[in-house]
Length: 249
Length: 214
Image (cartoon, rainbow over all chains, first blue to last red; front, side, top):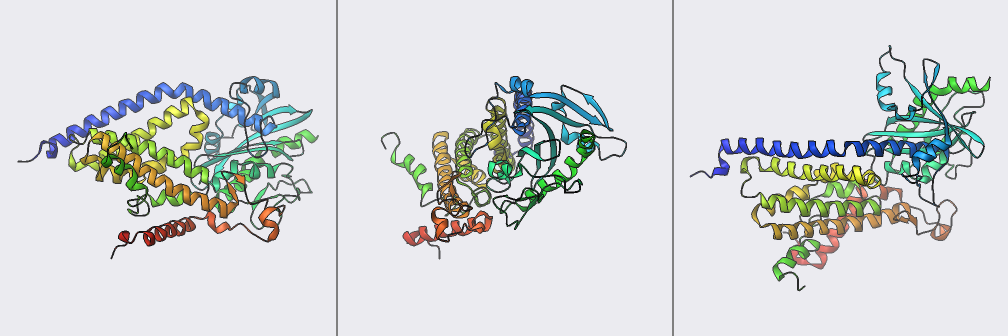
């Protein structure tokens, strides 16, 4: 005789019940944790922006954010202005850090929409620093960064992060040895044209002494992630060039 | 071991050496190649798999008499995926920093063939306690190989261990680098992990001839 567990009807009923139970558990847990996760993400954005401003708790080798509990207060203290640039117009918006750069980027693919460009203006040690969030694609998934610039578009701070790059290779873009290389790099060439910064192989400048060559040293084994970094700097930071031009006048 | 009977301790110890999931059963190779470029990632992955395989084996074992055999693979897959997602959600809510480190591994854990392999080969036919031990044992055996491979790849590829430079500074040419030593960038690429695993298999089989197949 056929075992009960082999019968078709049992199989179907089992599958339905199992899916219902698992679905309920996951959906319940998801909606329960959602507010906490959203809060964590907001704090993380504040920490990222502070990091690019130079407000962090870095040790000799590792990159550390300010404590999550202190982040909202410090964010308030260091970031003086949050603005959104859309169609060349500048709008003050103290929630600008919540703008989803990824969504803006994909919306901007249709010609009728002009992208909202958030910009955070802060002060560190008497210097005004402009922090820009950028978004791009790495090897496996999204990569993004917060870049702190001075008014001449020279990088003062950089924080890179990724969703799912390979640990030990592409994932190293969020290590200090990579991020710190960007500090001091120029985004413009001598004539004031936007060039960006290229993550270059065979740069022959591993110590990154030449700051005006628009190049930083690539990570071995992470070519595609590096190319993604180059591409997102080129495409996203260039959008802010008109704003920086107005600063010079 | 007073706590475990001889048979039970065999469940834990066997997969560490003579029945190792990677070197003998040749399971879980994909993740062993993917994430062993540095030691820290290997350790994180080892701990994650110990948790998921231990818990998953118990759940599958408890359900072994009611799982319909026709869809058992799908059911097992759902169990692993659910466990992993629960852990991921809880970490995201209460230990956000840690969850960011682990998020890369979530997909790799679900598709790890050791997990499905142990569900299929052991948990479906044995009680929860035995299955738990088997899960822990196999995950440890997997972890040991991961850590050995990670150790050599990070040491020879980057000259660091857990991110700390141990051979000197390659740019300033101090330590070992002052006498002309260079990091082998090839060690960072996946094929070298396969070669390191191959070397481990070679050493293991030449020490224990019983493992050699005809």
